[in-house]
Structures are given as C-alpha cells and as structure tokens.
Length: 322
Length: 255
Image (tube, rainbow over all chains, first blue to last red; front, side, top):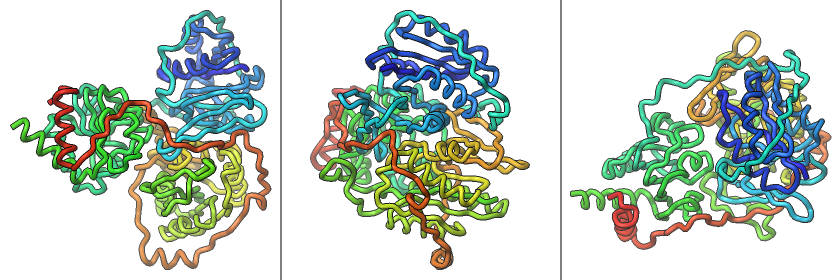
C-alpha cells in the first residue's frame, strides 16, 4: 500500500504540522511518498526532503502556485495523484488543507476523512478514528471501495520528532496549469493591529469559556485571575460575543500558550481550543459536565457548578495570600 | 442577489449524548438547534440582502424534525426554504450529502451560497467546499467579512495564528462562514407569524437522483478514552476548593 503525504509550506518555510503528517505516513506499511506545492521557491524548500525516509518525493512547482489558491492546488495535486495512483493520501489538518483538500478528494470522486486522530489497517482495509461533537465522542470511519483514500491528520495526533531520517531523491513535477483555471485573486496576508496582550509568556492563565453564560458573570472568573496574579484569557465564543477582546483568545485562531498552570473555567474542550493550550505544564479544568472533553487533558478536574466553585476558590486563595 | 443559506440541525449544545445500543450513532437528543456556524451564515445572508437586495433561500437536509430549524430561519427573515427530507442521511458520506445539496441548489441558480465552516456534530468542515466543486463555483473558507465589489465579492479569510487575507472572487461562489462574523438577530413575533405563510419546498435524495455510494462509512461510535491521568477532585464545593489549593501549593507549587 502506497501513502502520499502532501506537506505544507507557509510564508516560505514549512508548516510545523507537515512533519506530524509525515510521521503518520511513515507509520503506514509500504512505500511512503511526499509532495509539496508552490512557486519557484518550492524547489529550494523540497531539498529538505532529501534527508527523510521517503521512497519518492516531488516538488510540485509552477509560477501559478506562487500564491496559494484552492483552484491551483487542487488542479496540480489532482494531476500528480492521477499519474502516481497512491492508495492513501494524507495531509496535515491545517486551515489551508481545509480550504482545498475536500475539493481535491471530490474531484477524484472520494470523501476526505478530516481531522483524523488515528489510522489503522485490518484485514478489510483502512479505518480512520476521528472525533464527533467537538470531542465528546469518537468514531471509526471505514474506507470503502478502491483508493485513493484521503485523510487529514489532527494537530498533535502524531509527533514531528518521530519523523524518520533517510535519503530521498526529489523529483520535479510541473503541473499543466492555465491562468484561466484560477478564479480567486488573493492579496498578501496581514495581521490586524499589533497584539497588545502577549499571553505566550504568562506563567499562569485563567481562561473562561461558554459555561459563563452571561457577560456580567465574567467578573467572577476575572476575580480568580486577579487573586492568582494570572493573565485572563478566553475561548473563542467569548471573544466572538464581544465579551472579551479577540487578543485574549486562546486556540487555533488565537494565541498558543504553554503556561505553568492553565485554568480552564467553563470550557468544554473543543479541539480548536485544545490546540492552543495543550502545551501547558498543568491543566486545571472546572466544568459542570463530568464528561466534558477538557477533563481528558486535565491534570486536576473539578466537576462542579462554576458559579459556586469559583468564588469559593477565589476566597480561599485570597485568605492564603492574606 | 440570490443567496442560498445551507443550514443544518444538530443536537443542542448542552445535550447529554448517549451512544445507541448498536454503537452506530447516538440516541435521539432531547433538544436540537441550528448548527451555530450556520446561524452566522444565515445572518450574513440576511444582512447582504438588506444591503444589496435580492432573496435568501434556506436550504436544509435533515429528518422531518429539522422543519423546526427551517421555521426559525424563515422567522428570522429567510424568504423561503427547501427541505430535503430524509430520516437516514447517515448512509451518505460527505460527498453524498454535498451531491444532494448541489442537486437542490442547481434548481435555484444562486449567486452566492453561504454555509457554516463546520458542523458541531460531525465536524468534517467540508460540505461547502465540496458543494463548490460539484457546482463548478469558486469558493473561500473561514470567512470573517463579505463585501460585494463590482460583479464579484471581496472576502476576508481567517488564516492561522491571527493572520487574515483578503481575496476577490467572481460570482457565483460558495463561502464557509466563521462564527462571530456578525451579531445574530432574534426572530420577532411578527417574523414568527409570517414564517407560517412562507413556502417550504420538500425534496428527497432519490427524487434528486443521488445514489448511495459512499467511499467512507461510519462504523462505530464510542466514548473517548482518557489518555492523561486526571485527578478528579470530589467532595463539597468547599472541600474541592481546599483540595485544589493544597495541590496548587504543594504539588504544582504555584501558590
């Protein structure tokens, strides 16, 4: 069984999740192939692949791939996949992959199994495990019919440091693209105003989620942060609602933090939030639902009503600190 | 501008989920609601109509009970709706569902299709993108802003780590909308009253000529296993707080 992993370059370098996807591909039996798409610069970047354990590798290069577009990437990679006929195509589950991989799979008449945490093979073929209901349940999806099958790998599901070294010859692949195929006109990426709040250096973070219910309740959790001398942060829905500024958001669209202790208050633990904080040395989760996924990654769990528990905790900490 | 808002009904966020006896799906939840990102997609469609004129059609595939979510969309201001009624959509994979929606959408010839970036139940995050491919439309994902611009649109895409990108697209196009793009409205009493008179066109997967031929099949649903040794602190609220303070002082050593 051959596995093709499609790696991602971003702003001229490698997306860190590319190596996690490569590690996943190297765990499969059979030949492992890799491809990376881009403009002229991709040839330089692809030279890094020469030192990995790969049976084949392609630098998919074309002037029309210099700026990422779903149309360009889909056409180029569909051409490579049709020519080489891999049995399995793996990708890192990045924002860019979410933008083009479903289209790529559909063009080849297949469904992408996205955000996969585990892949195994039994006597009937491939089984992909992924999460449902924002991480509350898991599910096994079985590949049916002929390949290629497509899956994208969740952030952190495999370890980049487990990529095996070796040697590979990197081949050039020039897809047949035409400017008329590309409908989107993307401009340069930008960041909004400089972030005034840097959560990445914080030792202690108290973060509040949807469980807080109303804006006026936020102060309850802010008191806890003050008592602890912690930075105050939030999950996405709180910032979406405008209850806290976007710059205090932790998660895939906000900041990635790794404090000594991360207090998750009323946060259920959807993957979009977890990717931003699972590097924390210690996680304390406070949530009224004992089955909330946040408890799976917590060191200390308190299944309690936050409206009763948090003021009590704040008071005890204040007493201790005098 | 004619806009389709593709919406889905999912179990309510606070539902206690129970895996069914055969381990193939969940027991029927007590309450259901519109998928949250789809609510933002519908709202964006309504706001675009208010700015540029035109029509908003809600498109929903789901069982008979999804008519509740469709009525709410009409009460909020959608002009009419299409309900692809099916009690067992689980036999289709994402490509199959998108084929059903594409077949229904093709009968409307919309300028724009808006949908949420992902569903809160399955979370594949791909229906909109596949829909665009099947209909031959341009698309953009994780959208935080939509502006009509000449004969096309300019959208603001959210990228990772706080980056954004503006992209111009021709119409027709499909956009997957990020939660938080706008402020959701509530249905008014008048809206609820009017909704009762609005047209809901009913279609079926077989009537649309979509066959069941999945390339992936949901085989088993199960509770996740804890990978980390979590110490659950039990007792009264006061005892729990005391035990946590104790752990923070002597085990984690941050107090």
